[in-house]
Length: 113
Image (cartoon, rainbow, N blue to C red; front, side, top):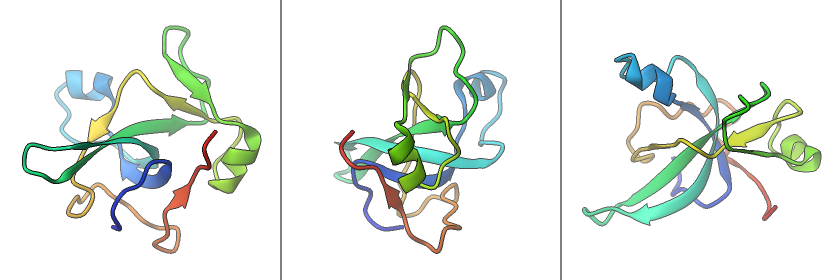
């Protein structure tokens, strides 16, 4: 994995909060996930915050951002699509087993929408 950058869309085995609450330790499937923020960890390594992308309409109580159709197509996503912003995962993408790059080992990237 390359160094994560804001707006990268990666395939990642995302663990939803509801799955974590049931005791699950890893995501059930690789899904498009957006790198939204990158923080500096205590160890000096970047800690990207990974927000899930879904093509299913979000729950009424979920905070989400609908991805403009042009951006969704650029990232090769189904439309309509949403970034869920009220939960996230964090991981060391350089060493993580959860990163699933099957799109020619190329990260896609949103523009600044």
